[in-house]
Image (cartoon, rainbow, N blue to C red; front, side, top):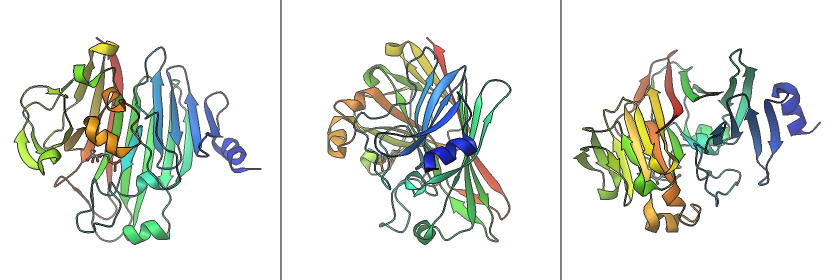
Length: 301
Ligand code: TA6
């Protein structure tokens, strides 16, 4: 039996959960139920797509995304853990941590009574990741695919000392034209503007994007709404266990330098990230766990 057959035998659910190898050679799991479809790569437990029935994709994946073992995938939902952005002291450590480039194991798949599908993944640590993170933690990712997409990133401290983490669900949302979009829910919040060397500013009104935007909104616990007149819908992002929200669009020049955003790809995406970033870090006592939880849902305008 090859790897894919083993996965399907152990965790596949006929007509609902199917493991396969995609064109880039990555192992992915496809989910299909009465409400929506989703695709998740085992590397990074990276959600590549979520498409509610009869709707446009909610998650954006770059047409030029590279599927290379050990490299992060441009688009989808990137799991940033156990730190967000650059490591605070070690400049050689990978940005956004290592969870996004590491293989995850499938712990459980379940067809729920209400027709939704639950999948649970666990990060598999190895010698390399232990070199970056020598702490005793267990990281689990619970994804429920249904009328909404629910994601719960659970960090459990299995050691004897407190651990401090940063994390984020770095989600690329699909929009018709980012220049027409308004983002609500962060009005009045202070933010760090990464484009201006982390200058502290304050948001007034809804966010409009017509230039490079890379901001860490602090003290932001409320839902965010992406209003997209082009697709005649709003995406509602609810969250728990997160005190900061990152909003990012690289705009044309930075996107061109990145090389994997696709031609004019920046116009069709915006990241609104449920996060604990910058000084907003989380201390987990021995035996405790931290949940970074988010729900995405779509509503017609
Ligand atoms: O979340 C925003 C951000 O931290 C930006 O600063 C930008 O660099 C982006 O993430 C993408 O990072 P990546 O390491 O995936 O290229």
